[in-house]
Length: 414
Image (cartoon, rainbow, N blue to C red):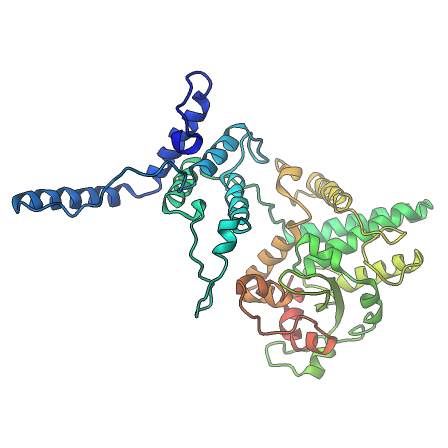
């Protein structure tokens, strides 16, 4: 309390503050392995005994006094502990450790922009990673121990979206197709168009193994420009041999064009993925892309985001997700493809469920795990961790064809 506030604690007023300080210290203790600490203690006791027998001053460092400053990040640790007690969590009533630790990152960033941090800003390193000496309290050894101990004590729970069987996605698209056709028959063209778009979105993020938000990068002008490519293709009888670029272009495929600011890249870029026109499980990718283009053309739109409102505004992800869960519920109730006890809202989400479904199916097909990263090559930027990535993100159709033996086989096997 003296180090942080330059005063003694006041009974009754600082009780919660003091309890947080004690908890921080206990978590700091727990951050080291017990066996390691016992071993160091034994070494110190031995050194003292032998020094006394030699009439020698023990070679132990002076243990104090420490300056009345917070040089170890105790104040930030108290903030984290208080948030863990008073904050609200998304998965449980309380926040998870990975939520409360964000304050450490924010504080470290604030330190870097302070007079002390700016003075430490220069660094030089010959290797791949930047090395920068710092006196930031949240980078201290004690704070690392506190963080480890706090995580050990709190543990963690996840609420990750689950995959479904590929047959479930196919059945969802079948139900959407049925309802959209019925809406058109009743003259409810607006409702029908919305269903066609949602169905196309689900199909594309599954076939392309995309995260949900990446589906909104689909560019309408790119889809229209390349729609005829691969329409009359034929599947070769021997898919195991190495295919030439000309043979790749003759595969039955449809071009998915994404346009946006991809993570790790410095500008707006085009990314093309050539997907199989249909998959072994019945995913009719080309049919849905053509239906999407027809709907957009009917709305008078020929460029901009493919998944948008009739006036061209980017679609609301919540609306698409709500319809996805609605049809998952219908599939669960009508077909038994999903466990009848499954909580659709808790377990499934359009942001990750289709991608996890595609990845699971690809693994069952015996495909290499690196295929997914070749489908979406900007993810290599994330794994590079600041290093230069050895490819140009601005893909063209001919470059996408070079990856066709991989991307086409991935989407065809779904």
